[in-house]
Length: 294
Image (cartoon, rainbow, N blue to C red):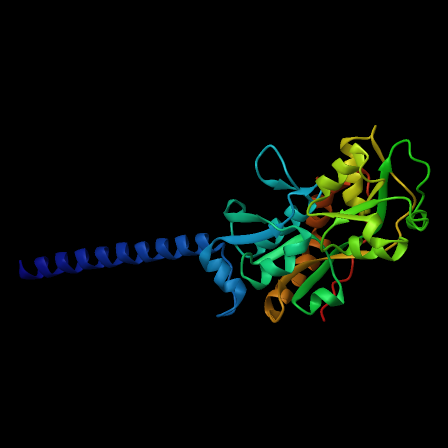
């Protein structure tokens, strides 16, 4: 009888242990699901974000095809899709992304002040910006162009502003704003700056300015939405490599994003992101750019 009781106790203990072990496995599975099955170096930005399971991404809300806040209340476009590709590699669900509006003039500030974890916002890579932040990428190369009213034949390119009679609009803190200053006779009277391109478009439509200048793909987005009002004037006159902004000294995170971009170039997700967004406006994607691992 005593042996029977001992055997019963042993069986019960074994069963309890087995259930506990199964419970441990389930907990481990849950942890893996929460983290997206990803593992990152201790102390890295990737590990921090993966554990938090939330990420803040800076983008624009007024860029058709790249980052435009639509009826859903969330920004949509190529930049948004690129951000989603990166976040997926971090093991974070798409619905855990918080998009933070980041106009041109504040893009460096939101990175430095920790308002966002990274910025994807038609963000041209240049040396001046590299003094404050770092760039992964590029993931796309645009070119600056000029948008005018549909019936305007007087503006054919940047040299059309050299006579000093025409006003051109761009956005404060943007690369196009600085570039167009090289082509006008008088900056103070000819270059009009706003905080968003929507305001430039409205000023052009209302006759307050004669043209809007920024990257061709952004302008094509506006034209696609109002073909009877606007057109491009001439060819692209610069090259604008778009990069992803991160903290200046975060080499590991920059490397992770570069690896993610390389993977997206090869697996088709980069092209699909384009085809589903900016590609619908007729702009060419071209070949995948070589990321700059400086």
